Structures are given as structure tokens and as C-alpha cells.
Amino acid sequence: METTNSTEPQSVFDYIFGLTIPGVKLELSRVREFMQIVGSPHSKYPIIHIAGTNGKGSTAAMMATILSASGLKTGLFTSPHLVIPNERVKVDGEMISDAFIIEHVEQWKPHIDRLGITFFEVLTALGFAYFCSETVDIAVIETGLGGRLDATNVVDPLASVITAVSMDHENILGNTLEQIAGEKAGIVKPGKPVFLGRNPKAVQGVVQERGLSEGSKYIYIPEAIQIRGVDVSKTSQLVDIEVQGQAYRINLPLLGRHQVENLSNVLVTLKGLDFSFDSKLIQKALDGMQWWGRIQPLQDEPPVFYDVAHNLEGLERLLEALKEAGYGDAILIPAFNARKSIQPMLDVLQDWQGTILYSSFTGHSAVNSEMLKKHGVPEHMIFKNPEVAYEEARGMRTSENQAVCFFGSHYLAESLYELFNLRS
Image (cartoon, rainbow, N blue to C red; front, side, top):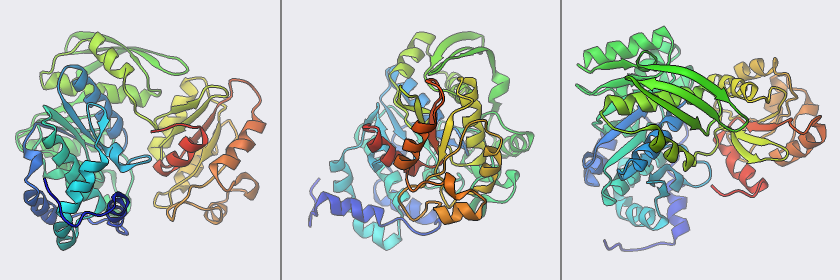
């Protein structure tokens, strides 16, 4: 493919980052037009589509990893990224290249400008096009925000999966759990099965009703699986699980009962779609999986973790997981996103047994010290950046096993990986 007026690589990335707009621009007609212009690449391979408030990324990553291990060339689209946008688009674990992004954005630029296509929509199109160019056997696609009007919802998938639904993005998706569930259930397609992860009755009712209205088979995952036992260690959990009469014993390298639920989402969905796999294949896949930012160990001594938990349910799951793993006195270092409702998270943190040191991250969306003080956080507990907060935490540790855990935003990742000499 030839391009004209080629520009420097960095200018192309600056251009697509510049397509990020204030607020959210949810509307599918121009996205559908854009996808047609670029050749409707998403129609060229089977897709499993995943929505939810929490757990959709981990569910997608585990599902894609297992499908790859089974011999299928598998695309994975997730969001947001932690350090570079290439992380969002992978084939068998390998990221999309800069060259592919630059070439296609340069070609598409007139249409992007004319239609007002956003950053997320461009990345979605790049993912679809890359999977087509790589002739994948299947792709696992995670929604960005909501579902009904999300840019990924142009797909016609083999099945839809909806993970845990909770209150988040209320200003966009609705002020009740039922309204938010309705937006997530917007990914259900006529005649295609919908798999729902563990959720309150209110969510179950909305998704089941949507499935019935679309003539889609509805599967509530907790009713299709038996968890026989979970043995939690410091870095993993041994799970005994049964799906459709088949037993699995899996060492899951992700902490937290919520990750057992996410694994359940994967196993029930793949079995329901007649994919074949055993414990050995699953273990090989998960042993080789890199899924950062999910109670991710940053170093062993002292134990330091990072989690992207950024809403109330995510925080509650993180705290539960730390306790289960024996880190109930961990020193927590949150850095919050101003677009999130932080007061409910601050209320939950009041009951934590360990010390809490508040920090911030670079960027206009960060909750700064003044905002924290307005929420009642004492000034002496606020530190200007994660590095300074960590130095304070190191001096406060009272035992070798006492951990430190950063959380609160995806935007923390870049500074933390630099601080601990890691690369995503």
C-alpha cells in the first residue's frame, strides 16, 4: 500500500492523540460509515464481544490467551492502554506495529477529519484492520465505554459476554444499575447467545430480558459452573472448577476472587461455543499470559503491587484480594482520576487496617492535593507524586511481609513502570 505526504512517526501519534475530545462522543452512524470506508474489516473473522464495568479486560485477555494456546490465531482488542496505544491491539500476544498504525492513519486521515472520528474510534478501526491483515481465526473484542453506542458495537459476534456491572460513568450511562445494565446489554445481537457473569438480580433481569427480545440464548454463568475450591497464595490461586461435567484444576496467576469469576466467564463461554480444551492447555496459556495492572507485582522485596482499580467495586475487589493473599495491612497509595466519583472510595478506605498515603499522577484528569483536601484528606497524608509517596511508605513498613499497593488509575502505570524499571 502506497501513501503520500508521509509525515514523521511521532506526528502521526500526536495527531491521533489529538483526536481525544472532552467528554464522550457516543454515536454509531458515523462509525459505521467510517468502517465501511476502510473496508468493513470486522466482518472478515469471527468475534467474541465483551462488555461490563469491571473484569471485562481480564476476561478478554484470558480468553484470547487460551484460544491462542489451542492453535487459533487470535486477535485481542482491549482498552485503555497503560503506556503505549499499541497495547490495545494484539495478535497472539504481539502488539500492532507503529508502521501499521502510521500507514493506515495517513491513508484514513481525510475521512477521520471529515467524519469527526475520535481517538478511540481510530484505535478500534486499526484493531479491526490489523486482525484482518493478519488473517486471524478469531478475535476477542472488549468494549470501551458502555456497549450500546460503543464504537466496537458495529460487530456481529459469535456471542456476547457481559461481566460484572456496577455504578460507573453515571453521567453517560445512567443513574441506576438497571440503566447501566441496559447500556451494557446493548451488545446483544439477534440470535447470538449472551453469557452473563456474576451480577445482582437487577442486572440479571435486564440482560435476560434483552436476550429474550433478541431471540438470544441467555446463560447466567454462575449457574453453569461449580467452583469446588480456591487455595490462595501470595502470588496465585489454585482453582478447582467444573463446567458441564468437566473438571479443571488451574493455578491462576492473578489474585482476587473476582479473577476466579473472570476465569469462570471464559470457561463457560468457550465451552458454550463448543471450543475444546483441558486443564493442561489452560495452564500453559495462563502461565505465559502477561496482563499487567491487575494486582501486578512490581517487585518482590519489599512486596509492591499495582492495580488499575478506579471505581468503588474495583476497589472493594482489590481490598478483598489483598486480604485473601495475606496483605491485610498493606500500605495503600491511591492516585485517583477526577472523572471518577472518589467519595465512595474514600469512605471504603476509612476501614482499611493499613496506612494510606495519597498521591497524584501527571495529567489534567488527576485528582490533585487541593481536591483531596476538599474531600477531607489530611494534608500530611498527601504526596506530590508516587515516587515520594513510595519513599515515605518504605520508611513506614513494620515487617518484611508488609506490602505496598498503588492503585486508582491506568494513568499511574507509566510513572510506576519507570520507577521500578519495568517495560510494558
